[in-house]
Length: 45
Image (cartoon, rainbow, N blue to C red; front, side, top):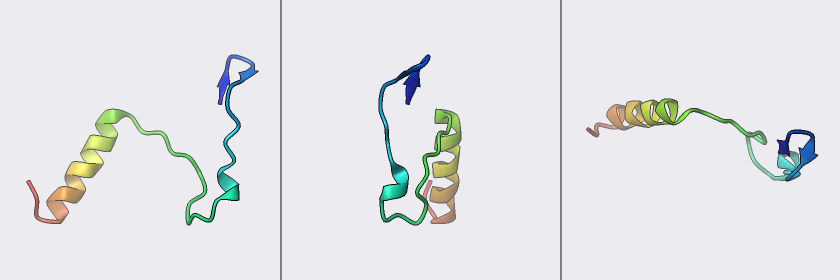
């Protein structure tokens, strides 16, 4: 993560044993929509 040209944090996601070793960034509204859709699929309201 950078602030301008200054390195703030070096996060190595490729070093973890995870099925998807990457970072995804979504807007709050997209996250809420996806969660609401999944909740509806599972029968929730």
